[in-house]
Amino acid sequence: MEKGMNKMDDKFLGKIEDDTFYDDYAISPKVEMNNTKIDRSVREEKHLFSSDAEEKFITGVRSVISEISTDEELIQNTPHRLLKAFEEWFQESNTSLEVIAKEICKTFPSENKDLIVVDNITCWATCCHHCCPYSTTIAIGLIPNGKVMGLSKYSRVVHRVSRRFDSGMVENLVTNIYKVLKIGLETDNIMVVAYSKPGQVHTCCASRGINDSNMQVITSSTHGLFLKDRELKREFLSIIKK
Ligand SMILES: [Zn+2]
Image (tube, rainbow, N blue to C red; front, top):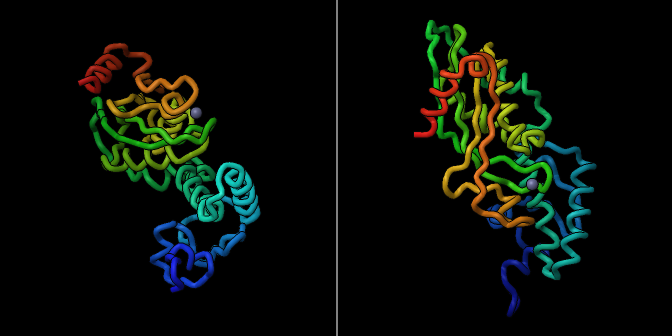
Protein backbone atom coordinates (compact mmCIF):
# COMPACT_ATOMS: atom_id res chain seq x y z
CA MET A 1 0.00 0.00 0.00
CA GLU A 2 1.40 3.39 -0.94
CA LYS A 3 2.23 5.82 1.82
CA GLY A 4 -0.72 7.90 2.95
CA MET A 5 -3.28 5.63 1.35
CA ASN A 6 -5.85 3.60 3.21
CA LYS A 7 -8.16 0.73 2.50
CA MET A 8 -10.83 3.07 1.18
CA ASP A 9 -8.44 4.53 -1.39
CA ASP A 10 -7.61 1.01 -2.52
CA LYS A 11 -11.26 0.27 -2.97
CA PHE A 12 -11.65 3.17 -5.36
CA LEU A 13 -8.55 2.22 -7.25
CA GLY A 14 -9.98 -1.25 -7.69
CA LYS A 15 -7.24 -3.02 -5.75
CA ILE A 16 -9.45 -4.73 -3.18
CA GLU A 17 -11.26 -7.90 -4.17
CA ASP A 18 -12.23 -8.88 -0.64
CA ASP A 19 -16.01 -9.35 -0.31
CA THR A 20 -15.98 -8.89 3.47
CA PHE A 21 -14.67 -5.35 3.08
CA TYR A 22 -17.54 -4.49 0.78
CA ASP A 23 -20.07 -6.11 3.10
CA ASP A 24 -19.52 -3.14 5.40
CA TYR A 25 -20.84 -0.94 2.64
CA ALA A 26 -23.66 -3.25 1.59
CA ILE A 27 -22.64 -3.15 -2.04
CA SER A 28 -21.25 -5.67 -4.42
CA PRO A 29 -17.52 -5.78 -5.21
CA LYS A 30 -18.59 -5.79 -8.83
CA VAL A 31 -19.97 -2.26 -8.54
CA GLU A 32 -17.38 -0.10 -10.24
CA MET A 33 -16.67 3.59 -10.14
CA ASN A 34 -19.36 5.58 -11.95
CA ASN A 35 -21.20 2.40 -12.74
CA THR A 36 -24.95 2.71 -12.38
CA LYS A 37 -25.63 -0.98 -13.00
CA ILE A 38 -25.87 -3.72 -10.41
CA ASP A 39 -24.75 -7.24 -11.22
CA ARG A 40 -27.87 -9.18 -10.31
CA SER A 41 -26.00 -12.45 -10.12
CA VAL A 42 -24.40 -11.34 -6.84
CA ARG A 43 -27.60 -10.03 -5.26
CA GLU A 44 -29.50 -12.57 -3.22
CA GLU A 45 -32.67 -10.71 -2.40
CA LYS A 46 -35.79 -10.53 -4.46
CA HIS A 47 -35.51 -7.69 -6.97
CA LEU A 48 -38.10 -5.02 -6.48
CA PHE A 49 -37.10 -2.81 -9.40
CA SER A 50 -36.26 -3.50 -13.03
CA SER A 51 -32.61 -3.09 -14.12
CA ASP A 52 -33.58 0.05 -16.01
CA ALA A 53 -35.27 1.57 -12.95
CA GLU A 54 -32.26 0.71 -10.76
CA GLU A 55 -29.95 2.48 -13.18
CA LYS A 56 -32.14 5.59 -13.27
CA PHE A 57 -32.45 5.54 -9.47
CA ILE A 58 -28.68 5.43 -8.98
CA THR A 59 -28.02 8.11 -11.60
CA GLY A 60 -30.66 10.42 -10.10
CA VAL A 61 -29.61 9.98 -6.47
CA ARG A 62 -25.95 10.40 -7.42
CA SER A 63 -26.62 13.70 -9.16
CA VAL A 64 -28.45 15.00 -6.08
CA ILE A 65 -25.71 13.88 -3.67
CA SER A 66 -23.09 15.48 -5.92
CA GLU A 67 -24.78 18.82 -5.24
CA ILE A 68 -24.32 18.56 -1.48
CA SER A 69 -21.08 16.60 -1.08
CA THR A 70 -17.63 16.29 -2.58
CA ASP A 71 -16.92 13.00 -0.78
CA GLU A 72 -16.31 10.50 -3.58
CA GLU A 73 -17.19 7.48 -1.45
CA LEU A 74 -20.61 8.94 -0.68
CA ILE A 75 -21.22 10.07 -4.24
CA GLN A 76 -20.36 6.65 -5.62
CA ASN A 77 -21.85 4.29 -3.07
CA THR A 78 -24.66 6.01 -1.20
CA PRO A 79 -26.98 5.66 -4.24
CA HIS A 80 -26.42 1.87 -4.13
CA ARG A 81 -27.00 1.75 -0.37
CA LEU A 82 -30.18 3.80 -0.72
CA LEU A 83 -31.40 1.47 -3.46
CA LYS A 84 -30.88 -1.50 -1.12
CA ALA A 85 -32.72 0.34 1.64
CA PHE A 86 -35.65 1.00 -0.72
CA GLU A 87 -35.70 -2.69 -1.60
CA GLU A 88 -36.03 -3.55 2.09
CA TRP A 89 -38.51 -0.84 2.99
CA PHE A 90 -40.82 -1.59 0.07
CA GLN A 91 -39.99 -5.25 -0.56
CA GLU A 92 -43.63 -6.42 -0.61
CA SER A 93 -45.02 -3.62 -2.79
CA ASN A 94 -45.52 -5.81 -5.86
CA THR A 95 -46.91 -8.82 -4.00
CA SER A 96 -50.70 -8.90 -3.75
CA LEU A 97 -52.36 -9.03 -0.34
CA GLU A 98 -53.97 -12.32 -1.45
CA VAL A 99 -50.55 -13.89 -2.03
CA ILE A 100 -49.25 -12.62 1.33
CA ALA A 101 -52.33 -14.12 3.05
CA LYS A 102 -51.87 -17.42 1.22
CA GLU A 103 -48.18 -17.66 2.08
CA ILE A 104 -48.52 -16.81 5.77
CA CYS A 105 -51.97 -17.71 7.06
CA LYS A 106 -51.84 -21.46 7.59
CA THR A 107 -54.97 -22.11 9.67
CA PHE A 108 -56.21 -24.78 12.06
CA PRO A 109 -59.85 -25.59 12.85
CA SER A 110 -61.07 -24.25 16.20
CA GLU A 111 -64.41 -23.99 17.99
CA ASN A 112 -63.25 -20.91 19.87
CA LYS A 113 -65.59 -17.97 19.27
CA ASP A 114 -64.12 -15.63 21.88
CA LEU A 115 -62.02 -12.51 21.62
CA ILE A 116 -58.38 -13.09 20.65
CA VAL A 117 -56.00 -10.20 21.21
CA VAL A 118 -52.48 -10.07 19.81
CA ASP A 119 -50.76 -6.90 21.01
CA ASN A 120 -47.34 -5.30 21.16
CA ILE A 121 -46.20 -6.12 17.62
CA THR A 122 -43.52 -3.54 16.85
CA CYS A 123 -43.12 -2.80 13.19
CA TRP A 124 -41.37 -0.39 10.87
CA ALA A 125 -43.19 1.10 7.92
CA THR A 126 -42.02 3.82 5.55
CA CYS A 127 -44.00 6.96 4.79
CA CYS A 128 -44.96 7.00 1.11
CA HIS A 129 -44.92 10.82 1.01
CA HIS A 130 -41.38 11.44 2.29
CA CYS A 131 -39.86 7.91 2.27
CA CYS A 132 -39.18 8.38 5.97
CA PRO A 133 -39.25 5.13 8.00
CA TYR A 134 -41.25 5.18 11.22
CA SER A 135 -41.94 2.69 13.99
CA THR A 136 -45.37 1.91 15.39
CA THR A 137 -47.02 -0.74 17.55
CA ILE A 138 -49.82 -2.95 16.25
CA ALA A 139 -52.63 -4.60 18.22
CA ILE A 140 -55.03 -7.06 16.59
CA GLY A 141 -58.40 -8.16 17.96
CA LEU A 142 -60.50 -10.86 16.34
CA ILE A 143 -63.37 -13.26 16.85
CA PRO A 144 -62.49 -16.47 14.98
CA ASN A 145 -64.92 -18.05 12.56
CA GLY A 146 -63.95 -21.70 12.88
CA LYS A 147 -60.25 -21.08 12.09
CA VAL A 148 -57.22 -19.87 13.98
CA MET A 149 -53.54 -19.58 13.05
CA GLY A 150 -50.22 -19.77 14.89
CA LEU A 151 -49.55 -16.66 16.97
CA SER A 152 -46.27 -15.87 15.18
CA LYS A 153 -48.22 -15.56 11.94
CA TYR A 154 -49.87 -12.34 13.15
CA SER A 155 -46.45 -10.83 13.54
CA ARG A 156 -45.41 -12.11 10.10
CA VAL A 157 -48.49 -10.55 8.50
CA VAL A 158 -47.70 -7.18 10.11
CA HIS A 159 -44.05 -7.25 9.08
CA ARG A 160 -44.72 -8.16 5.46
CA VAL A 161 -47.61 -5.73 5.04
CA SER A 162 -45.55 -2.90 6.57
CA ARG A 163 -43.01 -3.30 3.76
CA ARG A 164 -45.40 -2.05 1.11
CA PHE A 165 -45.37 1.41 -0.47
CA ASP A 166 -49.17 1.49 -0.21
CA SER A 167 -48.89 0.86 3.56
CA GLY A 168 -46.85 4.05 3.94
CA MET A 169 -49.67 6.00 5.57
CA VAL A 170 -50.40 4.45 8.95
CA GLU A 171 -54.13 4.64 8.14
CA ASN A 172 -53.49 2.33 5.18
CA LEU A 173 -51.12 0.11 7.14
CA VAL A 174 -53.90 -0.97 9.54
CA THR A 175 -56.34 -1.41 6.62
CA ASN A 176 -53.92 -3.65 4.71
CA ILE A 177 -53.24 -5.75 7.82
CA TYR A 178 -57.00 -6.18 8.23
CA LYS A 179 -57.41 -7.19 4.57
CA VAL A 180 -54.75 -9.92 4.80
CA LEU A 181 -56.21 -11.29 8.05
CA LYS A 182 -59.71 -11.26 6.56
CA ILE A 183 -58.55 -13.30 3.57
CA GLY A 184 -56.46 -15.67 5.68
CA LEU A 185 -58.90 -16.28 8.53
CA GLU A 186 -62.11 -15.94 6.50
CA THR A 187 -63.76 -13.61 8.97
CA ASP A 188 -64.64 -9.93 9.02
CA ASN A 189 -64.68 -9.78 12.81
CA ILE A 190 -61.34 -8.00 13.04
CA MET A 191 -60.04 -4.77 14.53
CA VAL A 192 -56.48 -3.54 13.97
CA VAL A 193 -55.02 -0.63 15.94
CA ALA A 194 -51.69 1.16 15.41
CA TYR A 195 -50.44 3.25 18.30
CA SER A 196 -47.21 4.85 19.43
CA LYS A 197 -45.28 3.66 22.47
CA PRO A 198 -42.79 5.95 24.24
CA GLY A 199 -39.89 6.46 21.88
CA GLN A 200 -41.95 5.75 18.78
CA VAL A 201 -42.42 8.96 16.84
CA HIS A 202 -43.83 9.67 13.43
CA THR A 203 -40.47 10.63 11.98
CA CYS A 204 -41.96 12.75 9.16
CA CYS A 205 -43.39 15.12 11.78
CA ALA A 206 -40.51 14.76 14.25
CA SER A 207 -37.52 15.24 11.95
CA ARG A 208 -38.87 17.82 9.52
CA GLY A 209 -41.76 20.21 8.88
CA ILE A 210 -43.58 20.81 12.16
CA ASN A 211 -40.69 19.16 14.12
CA ASP A 212 -43.08 17.69 16.68
CA SER A 213 -41.49 14.76 18.55
CA ASN A 214 -44.32 14.34 21.03
CA MET A 215 -47.25 13.72 18.72
CA GLN A 216 -48.96 10.42 19.43
CA VAL A 217 -50.79 8.79 16.53
CA ILE A 218 -53.51 6.18 17.01
CA THR A 219 -55.30 4.71 13.99
CA SER A 220 -57.64 1.78 13.63
CA SER A 221 -59.42 -0.39 11.08
CA THR A 222 -62.66 -1.68 12.61
CA HIS A 223 -64.95 -4.31 11.06
CA GLY A 224 -67.65 -6.90 11.62
CA LEU A 225 -68.67 -7.50 15.22
CA PHE A 226 -66.23 -4.84 16.45
CA LEU A 227 -68.35 -2.25 14.61
CA LYS A 228 -71.69 -3.66 15.74
CA ASP A 229 -70.88 -4.61 19.34
CA ARG A 230 -69.68 -1.57 21.32
CA GLU A 231 -69.00 -3.72 24.39
CA LEU A 232 -66.67 -5.97 22.39
CA LYS A 233 -64.82 -2.97 20.99
CA ARG A 234 -64.53 -1.48 24.48
CA GLU A 235 -63.23 -4.80 25.88
CA PHE A 236 -60.55 -5.00 23.16
CA LEU A 237 -59.46 -1.39 23.66
CA SER A 238 -59.34 -1.80 27.44
CA ILE A 239 -57.06 -4.85 27.09
CA ILE A 240 -54.55 -3.10 24.82
CA LYS A 241 -54.53 0.02 27.05
CA LYS A 242 -53.07 -1.99 29.96
ZN1 LIG B 1 -44.18 11.58 5.52
